[in-house]
Image (tube, rainbow, N blue to C red):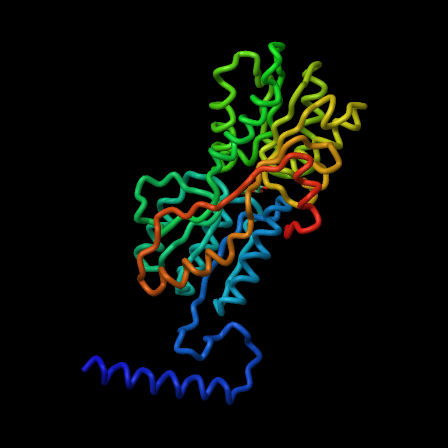
Length: 328
Ligand code: GYE
């Protein structure tokens, strides 16, 4: 019985693929011809706020093409309402799988429930949600942002290990309510907490953008007479802040030590040039793993609930060595 059905199915598929070949269509994302059914993924991206995001978008788009997955892509311009709209439209279009990078952590339960009711599997990529019901998504692929924050803090502890003087820190937070902003703040705070010499004298969001990073750093420089360290939750805000620091007649990397997260090319260049002191890597190249996971969840295979990206850190010397081969 099953054999007959699969034989019939196979015959049907062969007929379909012959027909589509004959049509001479120019699409490159159809099935591979090896019996692999073509998968359509709806992907809702956060926005285009940083170099990291640009590299992440490219990774997702290139990997979908390579994996033979049809990608429907939308840019939410850092607004949760746009992401919810995009997810609802993917549900209506009956895509095979939805992947998204949630701009903030909270407020997703309703729309995720809608996807679940429509039997469309959801993959979280890059950022987490705070939903209690973890059956609302199949897996979460991305970095451990708390660990990233801790690495930033550990460098600082080491850098000032021989000093007893107060260390005044200003912090540029990522997008308010986003997983990387919450977790990078928490991880860093935990590591520096035991030593009372470390004082976070100002902490504000720069929304992960260069322009906001510059603007907020200008305000910090006016309100804080004595800043020793800047901790920025991403390279872009750090790069904006460097402009503000130079504009105020100070030397970034010397008068004010700078720690950032991401390790995108522009950040690594500033690190090699001595304007940033330490970068914690956060890899945006999630596309290949995302496509593998998508194929598995569409087939109904088990996947790990959490897939953590492997990452490192860079000093100025290390940045000089790897800069020319950096992919993003
Ligand atoms: O660090 C930042 C981006 O979610 C890990 O978002 C990502 C962060 C990344 O805008 O540059």
